[in-house]
Amino acid sequence: MPKINKNIIIGISIAVVLLFGIIISLALLPKEKPLSEEEIIEEKEKTTEQLLQELTPAEQEPLTEEEKRKQEELLKQLTPAKPKPMTEKEQKELEELLKQLTPQ
Image 1 (cartoon, rainbow, N blue to C red):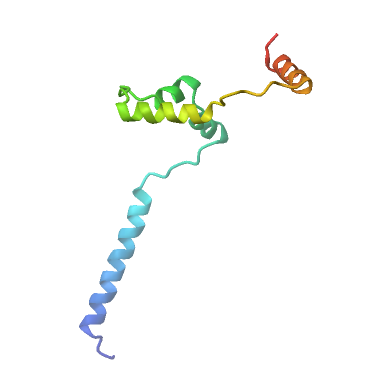
Image 2 (image 1 turned 135 degrees about the vertical axis):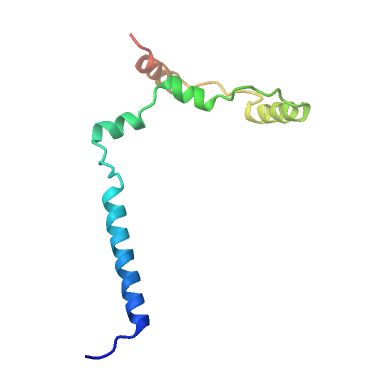
């Protein structure tokens, strides 16, 4: 019978212990069941109030003078100096759009 090297025996025993350790840990770990579609939808859905609370800062910081000045400058740039009068076609389109958007 051939002699087995001591290092080979140690290596094999370590591998066996690791293998059993992995098998036992996988058996003992709690398995997560997959979520149903309804549960996923419920998790994703948030009410409008929840969304607003998340988006609204807890304490609103007042604007500094420079921020106010920049905001006013931007507002001046975005506001036309002389608004052009609406054509009849544009007025009719606006009225139709308002009728569609107004709840009855």
